[in-house]
Length: 415
Image (tube, rainbow, N blue to C red; front, side, top):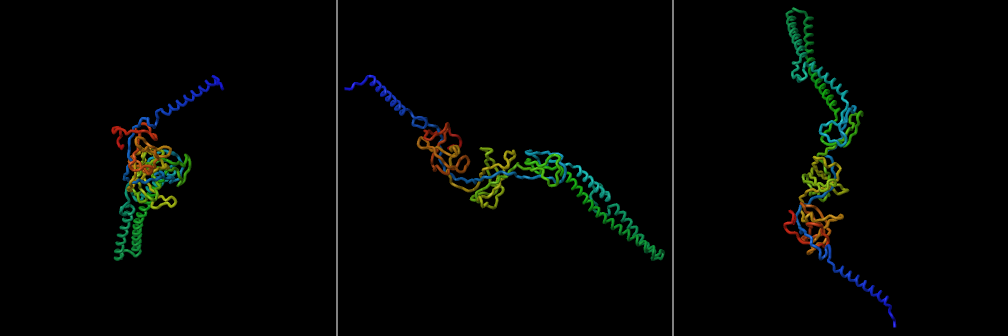
């Protein structure tokens, strides 16, 4: 007969009671109400959208960069010492604004010399500064004097001939009268020729004066168009020669967007179609323009052709060199599946939606394509007629219970 110690028997009973208590706790936890997306969770209010098949104009997607409308290296047209630098890198300039001023002293002297030459020729022709060139050489004073001398010599010669015929003068006197007549006639012809020479000389002197004045004006090196200074290449006191670059100006009130378009879209892109640009520098904003040129050749290496669009930039927010993603309108029609953009969620590099399955939703990954007036194309992941949910408040989760929102809670434009 084995006698059990009372102390040992009480110890075993304690372990049994503790085991029963843990089992009861585990059973109670298993029977607790489900939280989150479980059967006992509160349904989330959602808007229900259908996956619709629509006929859309397929836009053409392209990438590229922005370029200045014009970029010009401004050079000196005359030589001289730099007296002033009036624009620096980043400065906005107007057409005709002075960028660099050169010393004008030597060219001012040249202008004065040419002015004196013009005045001298005009004085010889008897013209005032504002008088036009004479149309008739006979209007010039020295021609009129030569003509008078020629007329007098001619009359004397005729009288001498008559007197000689009447044997009143000798042969020598007749010959002298004939010589004076011929000399006067030659002098008159020379006077007429001199008028033509002086007229040509005046034109030449006036052209030289205009050139000297232009060179004097060229000491002020000006901006050829509105834009901004990209580079400054001279310093104060530096001596520059003809064709020395002094600055680089870019025109940015409009920009050129040069886009690489895949060759398969060659028939879809035409001059004049609108273009929408998106840039990382301005997320969420769209800049618009129009196609103005299409390169006639396709690059064999990339199988793309270049399209150029003009983009207005009156505020100067866009800068040459920006990378752009472009959407070009086309007339190609396709049937595609679409959903509202607001119903697609972008997370961790992928797009997802919540497909309605009874009174719950299931998370589903989709592949998206183009965008069309607030809707996005679904390339993969959904079928026509599928229903998807968009939370009115809060956030959906896979398996969450849902209920459709009342009609009055739908925002305009929602299904």
